[in-house]
Length: 151
Image (cartoon, rainbow, N blue to C red; front, side, top):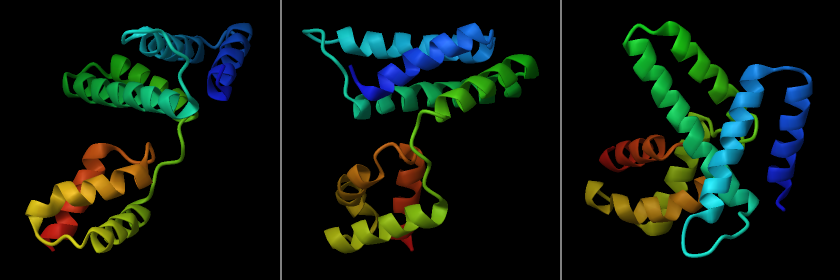
């Protein structure tokens, strides 16, 4: 079993003992998402830590989008619940890149691929995505690449 999955299970037990409902609910949801991913496909398999991070990143993004939707609809209580869940999930994710760090990685990728102009965005994304890997949202990376190629 992966170290991250072990940590999630241990933290679930601790949060249940501490009667921390938000944390318990969030970790249960995260473990359920991991289990679904493990049994999807042709054969059941054990996920690596990197694959678990991808699942947790996807779940955190869902929480962020739901919070925006709830707050846009004036349902602040539900929006706050989603924000709380997202905060718990982010504890298990690698630290997010700052705008400066992301810009530096994009600059390196542009130089490495020799790309110029907006039509070369795909080439740059192929180079930069493995370097970013879970430390920045795809939309944010795409926007940085787009602005760098346009400028």
